[in-house]
Length: 239
Image 1 (cartoon, rainbow, N blue to C red):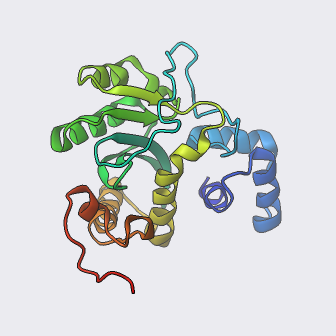
Image 2: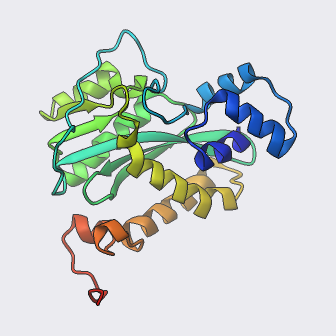
């Protein structure tokens, strides 16, 4: 699964067939497609391309319409988004969920868990709401943890509009996908966590660095915290 995760980040558009081929070619692992599909389901990942089905959708859960088409997002707390990712350890693995402010790219809250259950997602959402107020719109994919009654109820209790990525809207996760890529190549893949506590500590340190110190070209070389809290940049304007 760790090798699949690296390959998926490198080429997120590849499905189970092409990942199987890469495992054969790059690592000499002669696994069949069914095994790759099963591991991808466990990891909660899928190929990112127009028309792809979202992760672990529950057909009994209501799916809400996508509200961000042609919407100009020009202020903080206008839109929040969320996603989950697989975190490999020395033995075993975890899942990480994050809540992000779309405009500033700030990670508002996060949780580590040993399953793709709804509870950690709700905990992260409640922490973000408690510390940062309420967004106008909350956008997610159609994963079962985000379409569950309890998660939706938390949003509705705050009168937040609910938006869900639909068919062909894979690109709307691009900001969090970039976050996952940076986190894994700069932190997770460089270490082999032995315990959940070690993973939580190190990921927390990196996410704090991301919010407070990592400058983004698309944010006029400001950090997510500077944009979110409207803090002045210490860098001079480019000539």
